[in-house]
Amino acid sequence: MNVAWLMGVSAGDTIIAHDRFNRKYLAQVIRVTKTQIIIQGQYAEQRYRRSDGFLTGNIAYASQFIAPYTAEEAALIQLQTAQATVAAACRKLRCGTLTLEHCARILACLQREGQT
Image (cartoon, rainbow, N blue to C red):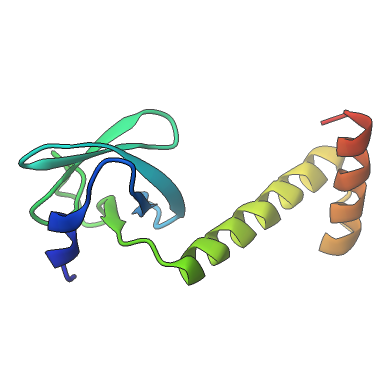
């Protein structure tokens, strides 16, 4: 992994964070120290090593790490997040036999009515 970009990261930058299941999400850099990059993770602040981009204290095979922000990957992440939201709403509504498009329409109607 190319780590040269880590030296140019500054507070306020948007990066792509990978969790231990290789799910990706957009994250904001809160602070940068000499040795660490601190981001606002999904649930709490997370600290990554500036030397290699991996989560501090984590040496597991499937480690969490950060990657540079690209518009293409950000759009893909947002699409996957929206699809997962629709799929979760469909499971909640127990409409597993409907297509994703039908579920998206149902979810849009519910959101307009303030039901979700």
